[in-house]
Length: 177
Image 1 (cartoon, one colour):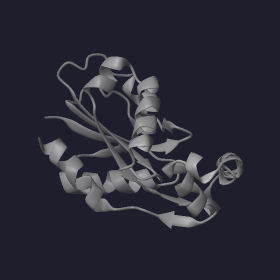
Image 2 (cartoon, one colour):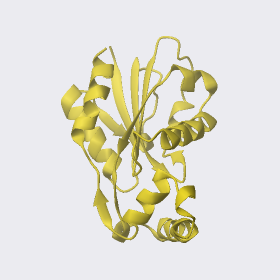
Image 3 (cartoon, helix red, strand yellow):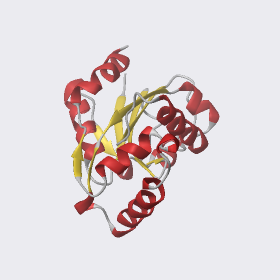
């Protein structure tokens, strides 16, 4: 089988996961910016950082697929929010579904893992977005705050890492399946 790990990473967290997954599976990892033709691969593992509800590079990369009939597609999101929170998962998947053709979304195995953030490394646009979001949610009544809101409030303007390479274990099982 011809397999590939493709990743979309802006600040490096998703790249760290992709490189670790590559090491553990002996599958080459490449940035979505450098992938030319993904139609030659049987198994496509895509890791993407979550930014403003979207998965970095996922749509741009997967729209290059011509025929998915004999392909295995594994999608992995990397974000700050707890991937065990059902509301969070539903929001992420709803956004993913809007970014992908229905046949690709329905065929994909989807996983969610936690990343990290370092506010000192955010570009101006992302800092501004996070500041606006923080101001919008910090004054919400407690019962209206989602787990995602609470996590963002708790980590605002800090360096926080939830990286856990053991969270790749179920993904590795799926890859080897």
